[in-house]
Length: 86
Figure 1 (tube, rainbow, N blue to C red):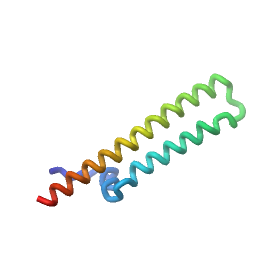
Figure 2: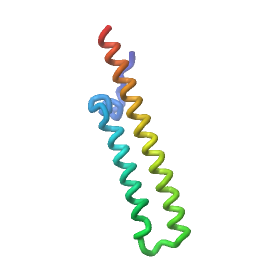
Figure 3: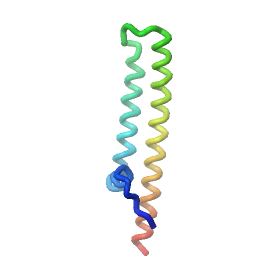
Figure 4: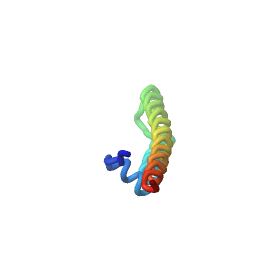
């Protein structure tokens, strides 16, 4: 069995949820920016709508990625435990 050598996966395995949680924190930061978008002065309505749509898509992508990373890390961790038990 191959053991992941990429630092992100290794960190994720070592901390069990650290990397996905950081992605989720970035998603919530994006959500905060979206919520505060109405307070920004000097943006036209078109620019505000465009930026809001980009932030919404970024938020959804980050949340989905965090969930996928968490699931992947747990699957890899389970496979490593099975391989070590043999």
